[in-house]
Image (cartoon, rainbow, N blue to C red; front, top):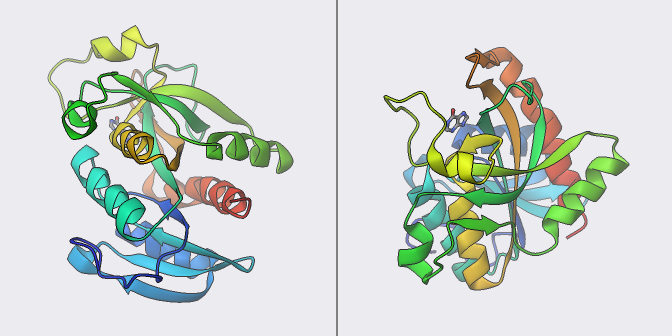
Length: 235
Ligand code: HPA
C-alpha cells in the first residue's frame, strides 16, 4: 500500500498505462486484457493488473492535472518499483495544422508550472520524455502503419481562461497542443531515472472549436490504447 494506492507490493506490473479517467482504465482492462484483477480503488481511482498478449501490465488512472499525476506516478515509481509509465490522454490542438483524431507522441512538455522546480530542483520549463519508451512508441507505430507525430506540447494548469490567445510559453516553444499532465510525469521520471512517455489523441482544435463527440471519443482512443499496449510488450 502507498498513501493513495491500495495495491499490495507485487500487484502492480513494471509497465503501467495511465489514462486520466478511472472509467477509461476500466474500459481498457475489460476490453483489451485478460486475467484482470482490480488492485486498488482508493478514491475511485481504479488500478487493474492483467495480461495483454501474455505480458503483465497495469492500467490505472492519473486523475486530472499536474498535482494528481504527480502523486500517482511518484507512488508507482517509488513504492511499486514501476519502470515505465505511458500516459494516454487527449489534447487540444493550438493549430489547425493538426486534425481531430491525430495521434501525438510527446517529445517534450513545456509548462509554467513550478512543480518540477519545487519538487526536484529541476529549473527547466521544458522537460523531455524519459528513457527509450518514446522511441519504442515510434517504432511500434511504424510497424502497425499508424501515423504518429512527435511533438512538443504545453502542459497547462488551466483549462478555462479569459484570454483566447495562445499562452506565451506555448508560443515560445512552438507547442502544437495542450494537455494538463505530461510535464509532471516527465519531471518525476527524470528525477527518479525511470521511463516515461505520453501518447495523446487530438480531441479538440482550439482555434476552430471543433471537438470529437463523446461517441467518437471511444473509437479514437482505441487506436492510441492499441499503440500503447503493443509498445508495452517491448518493455
Ligand atoms: N486544454 C487542456 N487540456 C486538454 C484540452 C484543452 O483544451 N483538450 C484536451 N485536454
